[in-house]
Length: 53
Image (cartoon, rainbow, N blue to C red; front, side, top):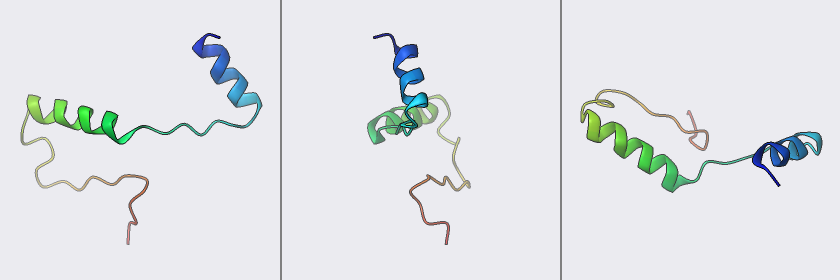
């Protein structure tokens, strides 16, 4: 089954919750930091699982 058909089937079944794995987020953050170590300096990064309070 192609990826598009899989997503279409999930949409029609209302099973459209897809989660990004922590390892994938970590790789992306590391890529930003390799490019510019100051990318996140002085910034707050909120993830959906964080309690904003």
